[in-house]
Length: 263
Image (cartoon, rainbow, N blue to C red):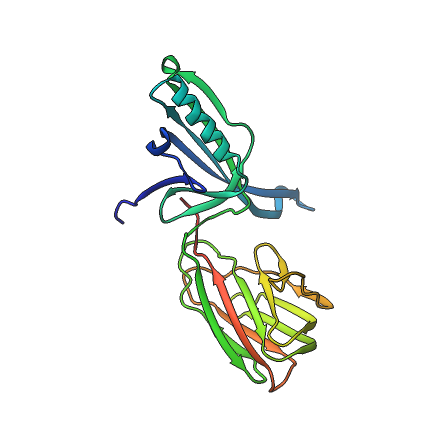
């Protein structure tokens, strides 16, 4: 693969010579929560929990200025930019990580007052990096179903968590809607769903969020199953089943960003 294009920034703030910044190191580690319990019989143990909880990045570098006042202003601008809450952190233009400053920004004066060495740590709720370009696939389905929704091949190397918007073109009263990933057999079941004509229910698989995208949450009588990701490297085949009958009429959007393990 050819060399990538550098695009070092946090949010809209450039981490390069534009702001007098030279990065000297970039450390990245996954945050994994693994727990063990002793076996009932014999030696050894068994895993009771193994999950990725996020990603941590530590940046180190130097802020350089033309004089003591200029370098102080540049350091102040850096700290201000890094303190703007959750933003996208990038090293190259093809991958990014949504994260926020975790802890202090450390700095020390060097080079007779014209440079500061600094270090900052960021933590992301996401365990993987993402492509800056989102993907949208839209499907129109009608009738009794079940309806098959086949995406293009999911690029990337890590599971991606989609946002699925299901819009009905007829009113629904106490409907049952079942979404199944036919590859992994994971399911999300909405029981007793009420929607107005042209209203949509939004399924944010990563956040575990259910809403209508406007002002209030959609509240079915029950939600069964689990919020699930799509597997990389192959098409995703989703099945939408319901008990509405032949009059059902849907528009379904599957939105996601390809995800990767490394920056």
